Length: 281
Image 1 (tube, rainbow, N blue to C red):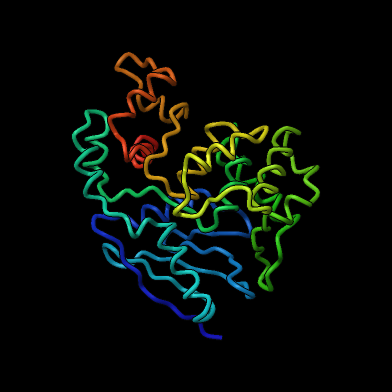
Image 2: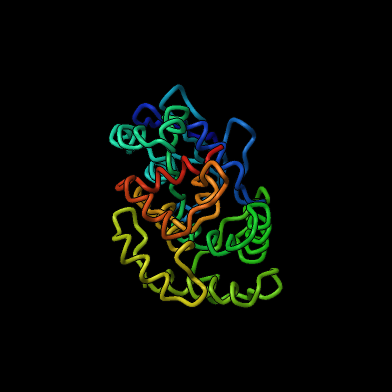
């Protein structure tokens, strides 16, 4: 069957190619791929499964390709959330552009967006699997989970397993410390039973409270979920190592978490966007 496509656009300035490349650095075997121009991922949309492909189109557009018209329609709002196409960057460009640390970064990359997620539960799982390990290690752990519990597509890819499957599934032997294995199961059960609202319109403070109430889910993980799943533009992981390194003074002294949090108050309500700039080279 021939694939179908459409072009969606965001507000200028927007660096869609840059966001796709950022996602490309975090691809997981059998789930998503990046060839330098097109980001492709597996998906379950309604009762059907297949692959969604995204390619930058002009200065503000992204071409979305799906396996049929129904899948394309269902994928479009997810893509807009993933790429931040509905953001109005003008307020944060004005605010952050005046900051002595962020100003040069914002001027260099005015189109930088804070990526959302394709699926809130998947982002929760990836956040837990990424605790205290490198991006490469997190990708490996996620691939093992997907290989064990993900539904296989005819082309060999796999769909990310849903929360109920992971909550009830065998998580031993994946290479996870026991505490992280238990945290993954706990957050899967929370999501599967509707114990937390991670929709784009959710209350981010309520979501964080529900997440950190789980053993093994700390402030960093909850804040990262706020950034990516809910797309809370003001979420700020003040203790993040990358943030602390970016905020180091001329002598190389990194701020304390408290100092980082105080520093970030000047960037509200766009501390999540500020974080992306601090994370960027």
